[in-house]
Length: 257
Image (cartoon, rainbow, N blue to C red):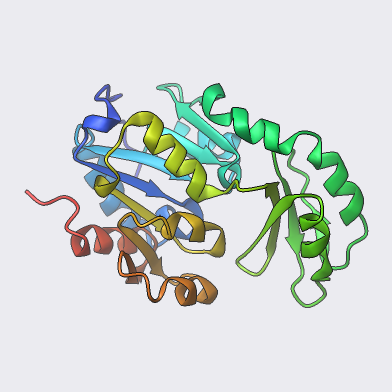
């Protein structure tokens, strides 16, 4: 389903609709046909549809999946669970926006070294090999996880997020997908009412709770569904992945004629 998009120069603040979406299980979820349906619709309406990836993945992953044209190229990227805020150019290169990342860098400081030290040998955690600038990520074994690690990290003045019951992230205090997305939207002067936020795991909760039109796609982590159940602005889709996003666009009437 390779597609070749013409690079759109319309200012994202002037677009009719902006999709801010998680990747794994959300924008990349669903069947091939369901993904193709959403991606082709975005490509056909790119002058009116803005796209922001909000993901735990690193910039290199985003470059790789968009380079061949199988996945639409986003206008902007929030990566590394909110610790990277960046643009993406027509060469699929992700470039951090220094003025938006300055507070994140300051909040992190040398926390990576300290957090690695105190978590070394913690039962149920295995440090991932990928190097991140302002976060630490661990694979987590929920059956053996020592929950005291959460308090240990809090004592360092840092935040933790457990998602999909198998990932454990250490982040700067107050930094996650939601605050970083809000910072980007404010910087770009985008009307929040025109933004649909989509996710499927607990590391998406902070952006689903912001009050913007939102969707927890079908097949979402049960704890996420429980957390957003009473949020009137957050729709729980039946369809999974890309089809769940399409379902929510209709439910929220985000692209009416």
